Length: 123
Image (cartoon, rainbow, N blue to C red; front, side, top):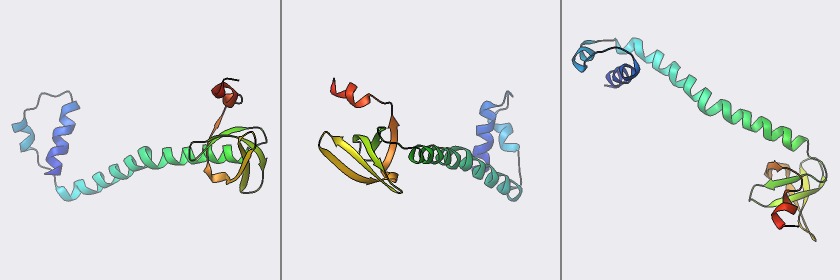
């Protein structure tokens, strides 16, 4: 049943005038088709799920490793903040003029251009 569905799907994009009756006559050994389907599924998972996620993690790692005092970042709960001090796995950020908090580097999700906070506050 899955095989016939895939054949119908392939013939939707294949420039061939085959009727559904002709497609029903096509017989493929299900046991020979299963490894091909499994390999295609693994390739699909790699290119559409695993690879983009690993690229995103690599970019986040470089951002977190290159943090310096004065950078403006967004932390995981959506708070826009300025970095005051960077330690091994901890960062001290300022979320307002007299309010500083200590967070883990892993909670930083994005670096924003300098001057974003002033622009958002209208200063």
